Length: 88
Image 1 (tube, rainbow, N blue to C red):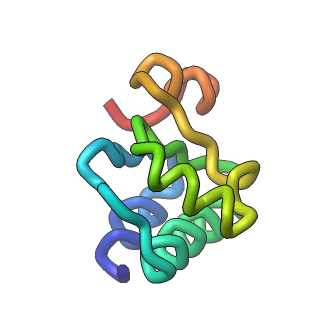
Image 2 (image 1 turned 90 degrees about the vertical axis):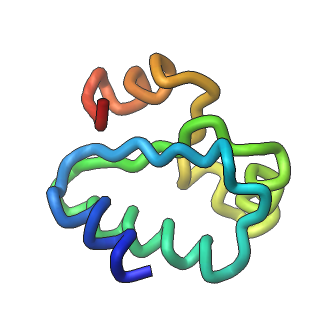
């Protein structure tokens, strides 16, 4: 949790998080993502989830976070959501 937040939010720049190998998102995972998003907010940076499985998307939607956590199917789409910025 703390290591993820430090890695993503520490640099205060846009982040792309590859979720392809994440089969399930628990409440702790949701909290971790939201903490990172909140930490990025003051700098104007965003976080995009890359290739989240349908189960992860469903959890985000059920938790009411579908519109708060942008998701992309491809790296190009993720970069476009970030305005061309983001991790390589």
